[in-house]
Length: 280
Length: 93
Image (cartoon, rainbow over all chains, first blue to last red; front, top):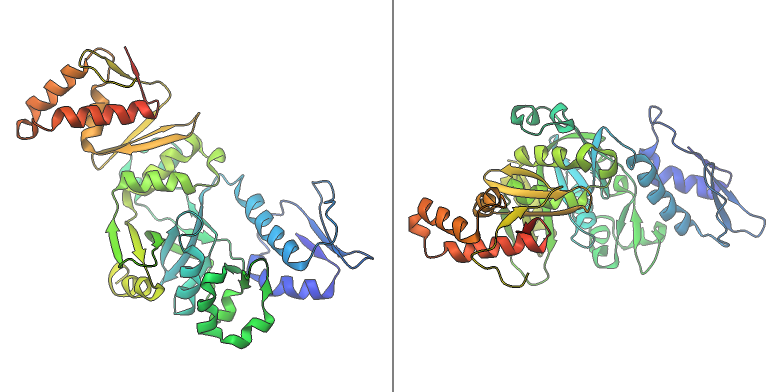
């Protein structure tokens, strides 16, 4: 729950965090954002000592808020595997884009959502656990049951090298309205890239580990389940909340989700591959 | 251990959870969060690391089972054991 007494900040919050607002979401803490007499912003959580950082700017507050929302919501989640991943969907077929920082998750999710995919998140994807995930992972049949993937929809964070995405879809004039954080990193509202692109839930259909290569050729290589489990374990955020630290859940999921390592030089290659091959 | 000798007896280290996925093996230690995976040969070798069989025993068993790959079995076994040891997944007796 976020309280804010500054009109300008409140307006910006409503624009960039509107998809995080849900009446059924549990309130894990209350955050107060206020304008001090000196004109700076203060950020105070009910369950934490007040932050003693003077002169907070909007960019800092929003960056901190986005990180805190994700951390507080997912760290104690026992009903999902929460991954550091982006997520999009095409005709309700969910694509999880998973990998370390810099692999292109945000860039790809922004481009894909602008070009017709539904957008779930560029940072946090939660996949529901099945019954067999909680205990023995031997019951393969149960692992193939229905699952859902949810995204924590926040502004898409695009670094300087990915500015071509919003320039292509929004034009140069859009730069005037954007929030810049550091080093030309901008926050882009996914709805501004394509209206009604945000989707809350999809069925996990495909797992992609992207890797950007400036001088490579497009390559999509199917991964073995063991390789998938190995990679997923490194991207699992809430392992401390899951039985066996998520090992059983991950191996169960890895058995049935098709997964590819995708090397690309251009985002349109990934778009075409997903639409014509992987999700066809 | 720098050199793996035929007389050494590898033994699976306690605390590792394992899962066989399409013949490949993935090993995970919840305490250290160490995780790694190996191919189908590695999965077989892992199963044979009982602390009683020597490296030579393991090589012989796999060579007997896969005579067409006899020439490469010793190298594969030592490579897999070295990987297991590097991750602390086996102990030597």
